[in-house]
Image 1 (cartoon, one colour):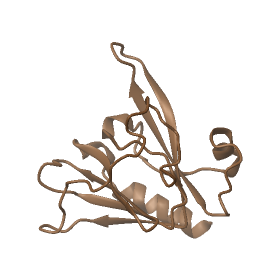
Image 2: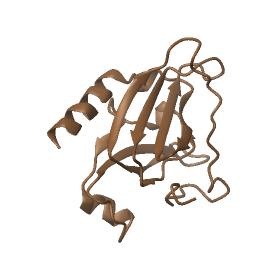
Image 3: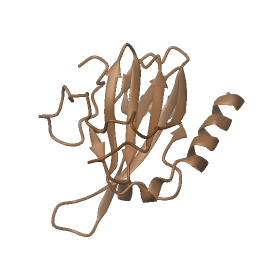
Length: 158
């Protein structure tokens, strides 16, 4: 667990959360690999890819702005007990439970509410995208995109 904590710490230190003005989006989910991309200008490029390997659960929104992230750390490790409060009975198979706390404003108000989203995976990487090899067009289509926000269903099954 110490290694994964160090990896998450390094990712949070490297990922420029509050300068990705066009925010974050699920780029793809294929063969149990989830890629979340982010960019300052998503019309032209992706800046970073956050890659999760051997994913068995994820319920992050299809996209979000970096203004929804409070503080400088986007990702953290959650406990089985915390995850179980939201996803009762789901077997995490001893994999790491990554959590992303996002704050979304209520329509027509200045107040926001925090929602915790999870990714259960074996490993996580952060990759800086290289110029010319960073197509920003997402390949992912949310299978629960028509459901009311926040939809906390497991997208792996969708």
